[in-house]
Length: 58
Ligand SMILES: [Zn+2]
Image (tube, rainbow, N blue to C red; front, side, top):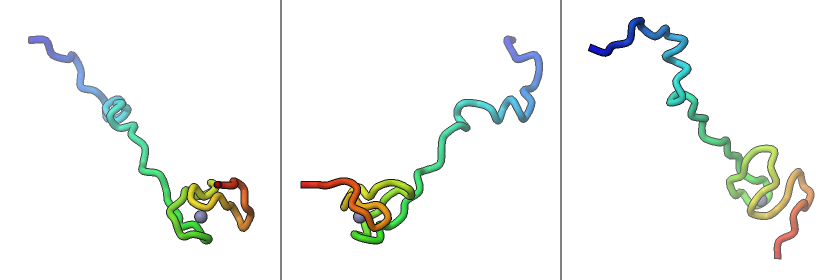
């Protein structure tokens, strides 16, 4: 029957694309509005970053 001639090494097996999935993104609480935001990003809720208003919302 059609079978692979050799066993895949652990290295080649573990390089399969199915193992490449990334971890879920990190979340931190915004110190101003306490909404969840990503670290080192402007807060999507209040538009502030490090006590500074970076984005103005209507
Ligand atoms: Zn905020």
